[in-house]
Length: 234
Image (cartoon, rainbow, N blue to C red; front, side):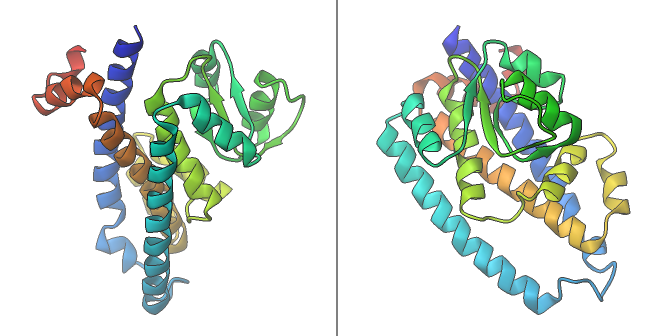
């Protein structure tokens, strides 16, 4: 059952990566960049920001790889690392079912506010709160692919990579809806650039998780099935 679950998780990550790649390309459509020449992000400033983000991203990628390698695929070691850095980790028996009601996924969850925050605080036993800090909510026996993907996101946030502020993450959640292009039409240039950063962070985490998963014997078969468009029958 564990092997089957990992295969299914890997398959859905691959589908998510494909969707994000397409939507990211649409987001960067020149018509949005040229929508307002007086945008807050002037060309010169944008180039500087991109360069800084790239360097920081390289730092994140290098460190995450080293930490995961040292853990030798031990989920508990990665979770322990997260806890020592002050981020709470909750394990819930029916985590997926409970999180689905709030349209959240198992793994790393960024800051939430309002009713979603209230719901999360209640199911994690943290009392009543209308604002929650970043946290991990996992199943009782989390799989390594989910944890690696979430760990990459979390480490990126802890390293101050752009795209993790509350507004950007809220736009990112809405971006997954079928009306994503309609959403873009309503956003300002700064908002679109913030959204682009949030999308990029998620895609980077997915890319790494898929790479990690592809190195294991369990998922090599799945990789071949996906390439042959047969993954849906897993």
